[in-house]
Image (cartoon, rainbow, N blue to C red):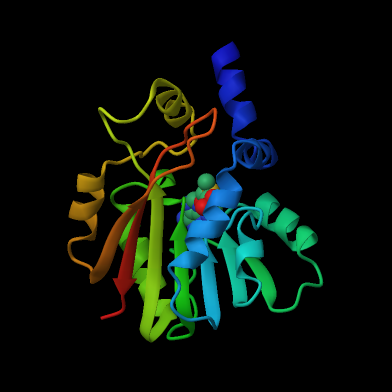
Length: 205
Ligand SMILES: C[S@@+](CC[C@H](N)C(=O)[O-])C[C@H]1O[C@@H](n2cnc3c(N)ncnc32)[C@H](O)[C@@H]1O
C-alpha cells in the first residue's frame, strides 16, 4: 500500500520533474539533447511532458506534443509568450500529423513508456513528419545488467515506464530503420546515479 502510494506520488509529473531537477537529470538532458542536432529550424519534441527540455531549444522553432493534457496545459502556462514555442496535446497514432514539415524530431525519454508494438508505429508516424534529409533523435534510458548500481535499479523499478530495455533490445527494434549513429551518454555520477542514455540518430529514407 505504502509502496503503491510512493510510486504514484513520484510519478506525478511535477513531483518527477522536481526530482529530476534535484538529481541534475534535466540539466544533463538539456546539454545532451541539443548536442546531437546538426541544424536548427523546425523541431518536434515528442513526449515533451511539461516542456521539461524546452529551454534547451529556444533557438529553434519548437513544437512540443504529449498525450498528457494536464502536462501540456502546464507547459503552455510555463512558456506562454515565448517566441517560436508551441505545445499541443495529442496521440500521434490516432491523429495523422503534418507531413514533410520538421527538420528534426526529438523522441526522448519516452521509449520506456511504450510497448514493442507501439514504438515502430510511432517511429513511422514521426518519420513522416520530417522533410527529406531531416533527422529523428531517439534517446532513452538503458537497462544495463551488471553495470546498473543498486540505487539506479531502484529508480528504474519505480519508474512509471514499464518497458526498460537493454541496448541489444533497442538495436533489434531499430534494425529496419536508417540508424546512422549510435552512442551511449553516461549519466552524471552525483550522489544518485541515474541510468545512462542510449542515442540513435535516424535518417529519413
Ligand atoms: C518521462 S516523460 C519524457 C519527458 C521528456 N521528453 C524527457 O526526456 O525527460 C514521457 C512522456 O511521454 C508521454 N507519452 C507516452 N506515450 C505517448 C504517446 N503515445 N503520445 C504522446 N506522448 C506520450 C507521457 O505522457 C510522458 O509525458
